[in-house]
Length: 65
Image (cartoon, rainbow, N blue to C red; front, side, top):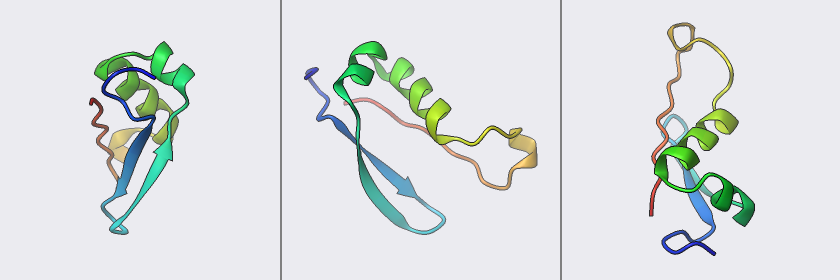
């Protein structure tokens, strides 16, 4: 396990006011090391492919220990 990461992330939905913990596989943490790499990977996986100007929802991805 990489130092500073606990192998999980907190997913917070501000619209529904719900939160959940998502397990992040160690190979993802190793491959996308650092805040920018992991943030880009999470954004790619979690955000639906639609132009931002056409979506009503917007997402922010924050990552780091």
